[in-house]
Length: 382
Image 1 (cartoon, rainbow, N blue to C red):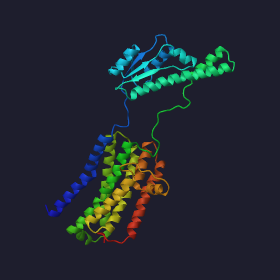
Image 2: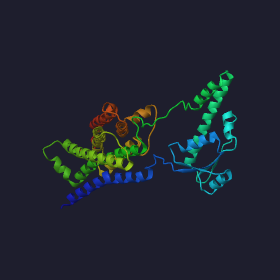
Image 3: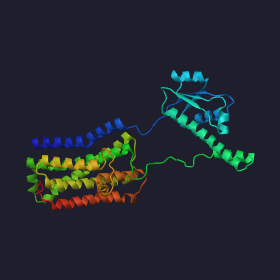
Image 4: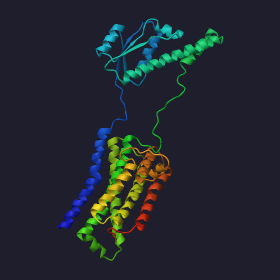
């Protein structure tokens, strides 16, 4: 094995390590740090209730807090003093103390002194219980106000009872339903995966440029240029190699990153089309680097600058928001367009909805190829 062959094998292994293993390791670390924070699990809660046995309103409160369907609430009946002691000792999470005559005060519209005692073990769950209890009292208050107003209008007792019941059971005027994130938006985990895949893509396709410069330093490029073919085909072959590697690496990163963060980016065909588009856009930068860089150090610096500018402005590390002309400029970033396209596919969008992101990425590639033809050739392609 010659020294040139050994160096080529080392470069090939370095490409695999950097384009696949390093980003996967980072995604694994990000998953440990940021993963599992989207959902909040409510723990069971125990409530000590001190209330008169014949209090109708107190009975309604107990039924409401135990029937929320959101948290598991266990009610223990005990006296007021015992309830306070149980909270202080940590035996229960919350104490609800209903005084004598509370139900009559609520129904008459004079209010009621309902007391809650929270201990050291209180948390979000006890807050839910308090809010549910308050909503029940608000419903009673609405019924009382409606009955009072109806009495002032001269309604008979039967009508007053019906009006009061309707007001108390009308419920909120705004309903909430479960939904999904709107189109063109990804959750935190999915955005991180998409951004990191786009960031490392800029490095992955650039390995072809570094390999081309290394071949010039080793004398391989001179032998290739002496063959009966156009010199531009050598650069094109390197770019094609980077393109294929970029497609494979990005596909693997999205697949495994989706598994790490438990996210889906939508139909495989549409995601594949987005991958081909973004890899085409990023690969077009190869032709500019080839014409500008004379040494591997220059190529590495140019490649790193392009990668960080596109990656950071494309939201590889954190969402970037802007307005006005700056927002329109950031929208032309192929990594941002790639992320937006994945948001569309994950939200159920079709091929027609991807027209704008794909047009941005392919348009970016065309512009970079034109720029590469216009700038002076200082690199290895001449």
